[in-house]
Length: 90
Image (cartoon, rainbow, N blue to C red; front, side, top):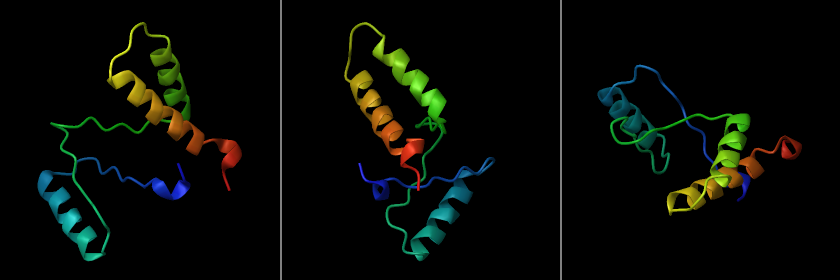
């Protein structure tokens, strides 16, 4: 995965649904492509640091059995760990 494939996220504590809609309108006015609001009723969004992702990936690898979720989550974790590798930082 190339560095340009990643995107920044902004966490705004206390943001309401109406506020999110207003921010999306402003983002569209700036020609930002594909902005979307993620409802906390539907999505769990986490900001995880490298150590946490490493530990979660390790724990997932040690689980017995496998379903569709574990391999795809591990793939995402591994891709992000490779992307965020401190030795690759500019």
